[in-house]
Length: 457
Ligand code: ADP
Image 1 (cartoon, rainbow, N blue to C red):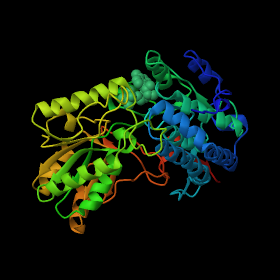
Image 2 (cartoon, rainbow, N blue to C red):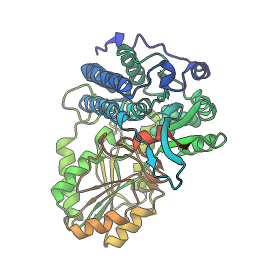
Image 3 (cartoon, rainbow, N blue to C red):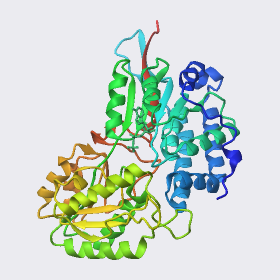
Image 4 (cartoon, protein in one colour):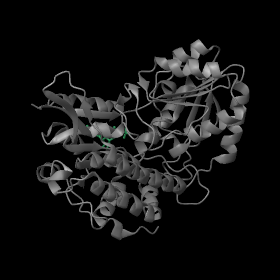
């Protein structure tokens, strides 16, 4: 496979030990480099975004090679990642404060916004570019500098982004990447949480690691933004359009082989529509899903990210079947293709207490529970302590509004499952996170409000 090596060459790969020096060297905010004006920062972000799109094919190949998702999805992610840089390039010009009507004759009051300091950004492997730009675009537009710690499985996509940033003139020290192994990562994370120059720590990853970082940030009362795991309910009511529900199930469940935090995880299908939904979903899975090397055209399902992940999925499926779930299709590793391939799997007669339903799977497995009433579906859906995304399918508008109000999630799709966009706020409730990314909310994580009162007499 041809990867443009020059894309990676200019970026020095920093071994652990570099983080502390990097934080010491790093200007705290963009303004320390003389780039005070929002339009100047915006121009750099825009140039960076455009250059990413010029290099889309190479960046996508790097991503597929290190992460496994099919090339068409990698191309899509590069465009999605670039869109955040463009969005925040524009948003930076709208960091508005308030002129507060003063209750006093002799004083004028203001709320001004300032960059919070170095942003420590820890990102996952499932979206190796977009999770970086969604954070870094906002941080840089706000006027912060940042230190990114990408996932151990996907450092090259991060380093390629840094190379492009450098190429378009982002000053050295503004966008830093520090890579780490599984052994060194906890120490790097601790330093980013505790170093006094770091103003905010933004993390996307598992709830377990998020909780560690939350604790570590407590000692310095550090601002924290967390995008953690989900356990998305996908509720199909009797009144749903089956074709729309099936099409959305395919799009939501099988993107990135089921390895996204907003993938449908808990399918709840009402009894009146259950059998038809199952048979049409099976038909679509057989027809549309092609397992293989993500670089080959036509492939829709690549390998899972690593051995640990495929073993987990294998175990969850075996466990469910041993407890009485019925396998409609798939159910095992596709070892003839390689060690990391898992067959797209459809399980029915799943019970809500089964681990495959309770835990976020991160794999290509549909687990279906049949329900009777709306109240029952909501009760099951809201029982989880996770609340990132949820999907509902119903053509009864009153039901849609009722369920929209009651479903405890930060992101909700009603008769739609592809929701992510730079314009929209992304984030969860309960143990799925703190704060929102993207949209006009996303930049606030990197800003501090200063109340200023000036004697005017
Ligand atoms: P996943 O289970 O999806 O791999 P993780 O939460 O383990 O998610 O990983 C997400 C990111 O968090 C990765 O960049 C990983 O290196 C990092 N990470 C893992 N453990 C720690 C830790 N103890 N401190 C800081 N970062 C960590």
